Length: 185
Image (cartoon, rainbow, N blue to C red):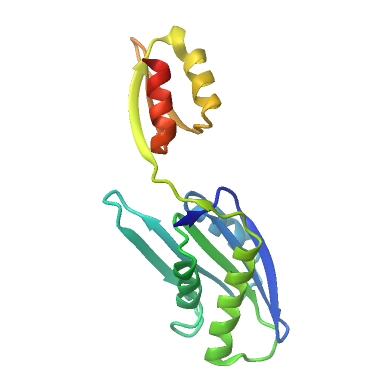
């Protein structure tokens, strides 16, 4: 399976209808969706399809046609994500109507083509399951711990400053977690 680390976008035009596709990591979904709705008030539709894993390592999929005829927008985009085995991603497609009706088949082809084109320009990387790890440090070890985490490119960090010390929660892949645990030992 593959995933991405950053957002990619591409514009696909068919019969004067413009399809602006955004492929982004799943954690950016709600923020990007709100931004696109605010930035594109005249857009006819903002369709999405997503694939992620839940806490039981099951693949969870969802899609929305956002007013397009049922099954003509979100599902074709989702099928493309399935075909290239992308996980932990969402595709959002902003559509501006060009005045020429595409029909249900044409629409399905347009949405799947927009999805394929943005995937083609994206840097796909191997998917690695994220693991949550909790630990505690003293206040004097904050800088040292941050330095170690940064060296291992562990960026999903949350801290809770308590009376006796700092409680940390990090999310990373197994390889980075093992390296971090070995450094701390």
